[in-house]
Length: 176
Image 1 (cartoon, one colour):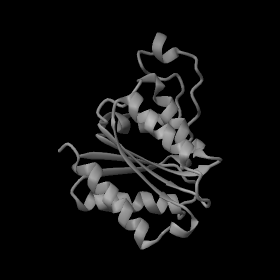
Image 2: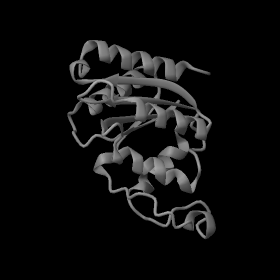
Image 3: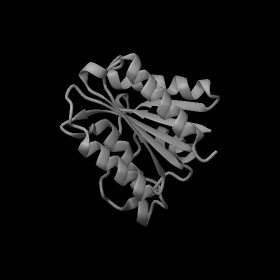
Image 4: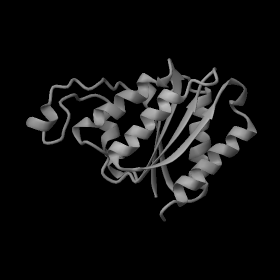
């Protein structure tokens, strides 16, 4: 199964990046093909709402930035994992940009399931991100496999690692 992880934390050794790596290791150990893209290191602009993609572009965005590297990965992925730190109660901007740029194709063609990995220094700040994730899954008509959250005292712990591994196992075995 082809798994794409979009990791949105600018902190290379941060908590979100750690969770994404743990998911990747679990999926690879189970024999899946995994691509992890740190979108925070990419130059991906937000959607311009110019409608070029729907008028003249035949589904292609007019912007030619690093999203051109992500589109083919999204087109082939069967499982999409979003990994994002929570800044101000929602998914970080680094994850928002590639999600919103999917407007040109409406939804990833082969994605059947999605999972979410989110971390924050504070407890109780996940509701906005979880609701957005649920709504993305519903709109794209993909199965919401759930989320792992990690607040400050849960970050990089064995308990959180086990939750990430369990989410990977559930996500990758569902519907096989």
